[in-house]
Length: 239
Image (cartoon, rainbow, N blue to C red; front, side):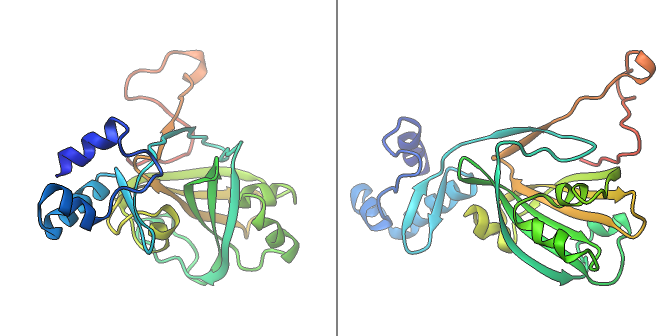
């Protein structure tokens, strides 16, 4: 069943963003039980080939992979749009982010989805000082946090990054229409600024099959870098 449905997706019988027949229709066509059909669809969904939308059916997932440059000084999201999801006050609890030694008190948490061609490809959760001026917070709905701060002469002076992969949980599942446990690429960041009481912590998340990153390492002092000896200043990386 899996191979036949996959074959139909590959040869165009089932088109991207179009619904496939219901489990009842597939069961009748192939003469197998609904349990067998559901198991095959579950495996294909876990593999990123289809997506199930509650109340609407099961669709062939559009396979779009976006390559973004992994900028060490500031994120660049040209050609994107964003949607503000929430602005709350929360403590940072993620074990990975705690390696940055963030403040223990509640911080301002800004969550938003970033789109390319009306397709969500990044989910951003940003934490920063809870006493940021209201006029800056008002700009978070249409600008990245770092961009809003820069407009008010608060500049990033240092960047720390941790990159890893983890199963999808919580709101990420709803934003991308993926099942619990789907592999997610995560990019944790800490931006230090030239204002002593403002540091920025956060994580960008995207399904593993939707986003990839590139990075270039310049030679030090004009000399060619030796394999395994690349340096990007004070940025930290863990894959």
